[in-house]
Image (cartoon, rainbow, N blue to C red; front, side, top):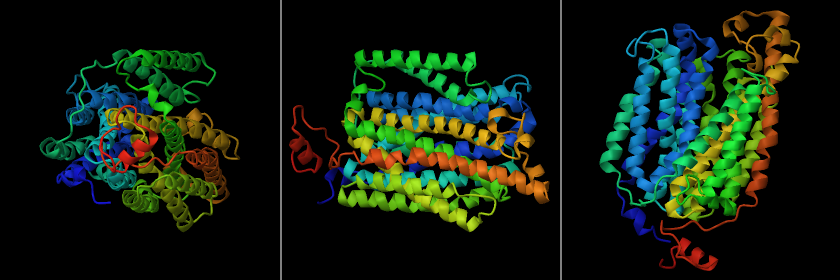
Length: 529
């Protein structure tokens, strides 16, 4: 088949892609950079009992805002909404860098200011992630999308490794404030490139935004994130606070479902889930986020404690994971573009990812860096098959007018899965560690987080004590990956039921009343709409 005219008519796609890749890099890179700078921030501000909120506020802002940004793009045009998200992110970054400097009053509220401004930054990041995927959906039809989304998946892989490296360098050689200020020149370049070169089709409608649905979804998701963040850490799982938040989440999300059924322009159209492929890929996205983000947080911990790597070197040790994911993402993207077929990739990816998790469950005190690198390559390969393919299937399952909502929902379910995964695997790690021979050494210092892990003190341990403590840590971390296997194996099972719907060669929607045969012909570019 010759290349569709719609693609060849857009010579600026590569230039726009450059701006989009910078924007995606900002959203992904920032959290990784900040995690490295956190110890220095806590040292300067104090408030160690609240420092986790620096991360939670960002995740919460991102998760809550993602479906809202997606729908706003559908209603008011993707370009203006996306550029607004970039501006919000950059403003939040600048405010975070100024936290506790006295600009906003005294210097005693630095941690409070940083947490509040991280939430603002997270609101912008939600628009960046969903906007990038939706804009690619506007620029090129599904048949051509795999190639570009493979590049974006590669950028995500690079960000996962580059974050700790950049964060370590900034923290060691500059001020922690530059972990936020570094976003400003990069974001400025992205803003300039996209504002001047990006030209998107208009899909604006005159309906009003579903503010009630947005509010109920925000309340419900906020309550869920608080449950997964505080449960077993700040409060016991059976405490009134956790049970009350859980009840609030159920009520708010139940009311949200009722409101969405009647809203003329729902923030998250429930009708999308009537499509089998969209429903399946949403659950797969949740499980992917659950296993991937939940378990992968423990790789740097293993490297820095058991293998004795520095914070910066632990980023280098993640290069095999990035390599596997990057190469496969690019190859899969080009293969989908060439063949138009995609069903096999999430199945293969789920199997390989489960194998990678299984191999990582073998980590122990004697595992060499070479062995762990091989295990990470396998995991990265599995992720490479899944990352962009899941978004592609979600977008190909809906009409063009719902592209933003579908992209937002796909990103949303992955983020929620990651939030739940971090919470559950944190509890698994803490309980396994508490039941180990080294449990008393960590008791009473951090509760559900497995105690306070002082890396300097761990390095000073010798002989049998060192072997017991590091052995317990290795066992607890490997146990986390073993649990991740149980969630990951469900991915290829669900992917097996995905229907191979031909990827559309244009961004036009089928006419009303079209038969499945008509839709297939339109998808293949053989019939006029």
